[in-house]
Length: 236
Image 1 (cartoon, helix red, strand yellow):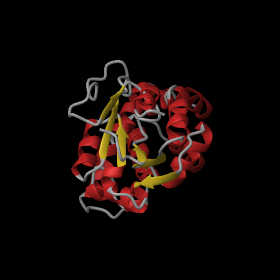
Image 2 (cartoon, rainbow, N blue to C red):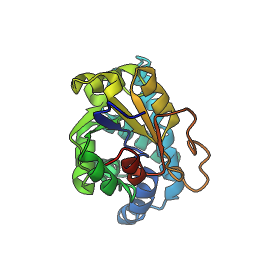
Image 3 (cartoon, rainbow, N blue to C red):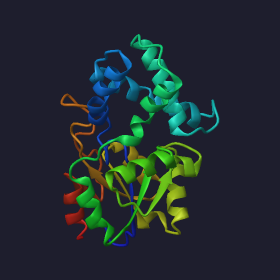
């Protein structure tokens, strides 16, 4: 059921943008400019593998909340060391880390969001910090109405308060907000606090050998093949 939904809240990394393919595409020019070589697919996977463990340090209370850009930078330096890459300047490390600000959307995203915007409030509900989301949106033409997520809530998904915070900021009941994600865990957590749910499959987020999130694991309100299909199902 989708009646009563007024806002769509989108996971971004993997659901809206192809983080892995984008890093693999940007990587060779960067490494050539700075005089080193990498297996960029392996590096992208290793960098992303540090994502959840670093956020868990915040969720568990081990460290206070810091922006995702900071966590990404700590993770970057660790993974560069693991891959034997050293000697990069501060400016180069900062530019490297800001690859996450320059990720490309999946091909269906802009057209799908543009259709959905005619009927719904569109917001990010991402673990990415505000400047990261704004840079990404400006570059890719993503038509958000506002940026919400971890930095606004002071915590990282799938902590329940992140989802509750989004509905509260919009002055909506949880059932008037639909979480849109390509990750079952995100949707299960959102539904746990009363948000409606839409699963959009991204079968190659982790490459051609991806084995997770290939199908809906719960009876979500909507299951879609992409954002254009989501718009059609939501009658926009």
